[in-house]
Image (cartoon, rainbow, N blue to C red; front, side, top):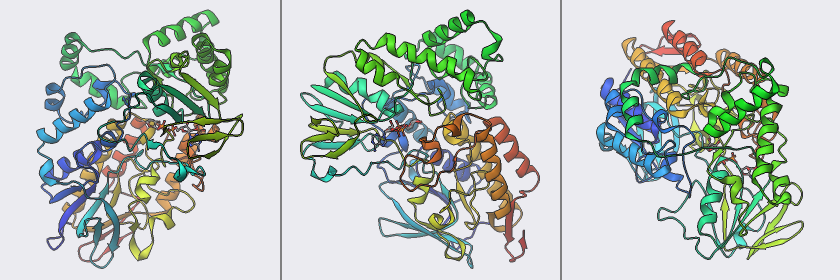
Length: 543
Ligand code: NA7
């Protein structure tokens, strides 16, 4: 039940894909007094901050946008198969204008803390502008990959050159002309940025800890015919995105590796390689669940790396991959492996020769010292839970989120945490989030949250929170879903929190697929929200 004595009915943290749509859903559909608090000076969230050279989405552009509005889909035209960061940012600015969102977004304002008042059923939200704002509902739309991981390598403070993390890139860009650049990290980001940096730098050294697969993106301009055909088939695309397990616009093939001959298999992989993109992993249905089947795809890609990279030393380091393809987030690239054929690009194997320290003039490994003018950290994120913990949230009875998650994140459906009434987490831990095409997962969460808030208002519910037992059971289900795949078999994966020292090793996202997850969430809503405790405006509770 909304309270007239609160500053707001709903405060939303973050003005990316999630926060923008949540504002629209609560303000324009439910008529709530809702606002967004955003640390950046503009909308975009992840796409506002991740401005590194080569930044591009790995989802095809026509699938990487809002589908809740036909008008938005019809009015926007994408220029490339995969949208680059500036184009996504333009798109989100277009959506913000079209939905008139800016008047309810507080830019340049960071949430520094939030405290729940159980007596008043209110959240008190503190910001770095010195304000404390009260709200009935608090919605974290902070993104899954927005808390940078800057590794604690001794000596960084002594480095006399410039250094950057890819997700906190200077607005005007970085001029690499004439510079010796060292790049640490070869995840999706590193694989995108290395070819772009090599274009202008005097010299690039890539420091690789874990070798990685990558499939060519085969990016290309989109033509009028594509746009026309897309606009005529919007319902088809909407159904497609909402019915595939990962929210991408392609289906998992209905065949197993063993169903075809070796020759047919080779042809299938060659065709998928030529088409490019994440759909490479969808050509057989058992690649994600069966090690032996997976090895055929893994070996195919390793052979492609060796064919592409002419220097056998570099090829060996790049193809020395020890996890199953797709069990870590599979990157796609534009000339990543080809970049190592340039005379001005070198590769260091940190498994064989780890970094010892950063010196005033570069990076020292156990074997050599590399003189550098710039260090680029493409070292990823404290994923999913990191951005939520950074909000410094204290729930009912003084319990902090950090305390509640000491042994790993607990959440019912990835939407609510026991002990934190009226707090919703969009794409939180235990929801499909990073295993999917994010806008599809985001729209589902935003709509579920709006539906839940509408139900609370209709039923005079003052507070609602996830039940401990429901969260416990959901945690077990999340584990079971992961264990049915190859995903938890990679010990150093950030899906398990393994990239952050001290982070509990728990498989964080829900691997059961979006359609199954959506059905579970819809069922919970249809049944009157079992698994949540409520307190009505007269103080009556339901366990
Ligand atoms: P990722 O996928 O976490 O990749 C980070 C890379 O940085 C990866 O190669 C790491 O090696 C490496 N790394 C991290 N810390 C270190 C240290 N201390 N020393 C050396 N190397 C290190 O992040 P991305 O930004 O590439 O991608 C994140 C998501 O963004 C991606 O999945 C897309 O959804 C978009 P490691 O593998 O841990 O050995």
